[in-house]
Length: 204
Picture (cartoon, rainbow, N blue to C red):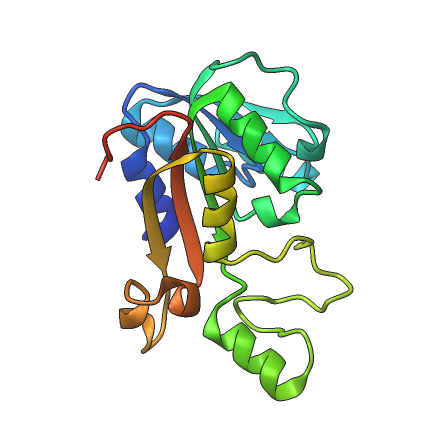
């Protein structure tokens, strides 16, 4: 089975033999892959019972923890990289979560869906209702996504916080995906950001 494109990119950004904290680690697939392919150690944090069980089955170190409660149980710079995939937009205070990620880790990697994607804009303009699609598969009343964010929004936040963007990748599917690098905020479906509080040489 081939790896999801975003997870493959993340694997390239994580250093061999490093320590990683994966926030909202799901079934542990990413941590297991990093362990097996790059000798990475660390922990996953998860709140879902089924996901925790799946992590244990993969022999992934997992801690049951609500991310909205913060990371006070971890000391400063205790990990090389802190990762959060497809969950930042579901946090109550994503800007504070980002602060905590960069306190606990020397670097962090975040991914999130782009709510500025042309399909979402078109659906809202045409129907006057919040979009429901493969990209955004929830109704407005049951969505876990409580902070709708575009690529541009996120980069403004990074500038305001003096966070350095080491790498950015844009993932998109379909016949218009060739335009994702030209106009990422319009044609990119998923954003991947590799961040640090200190400027560093890009890993790609």
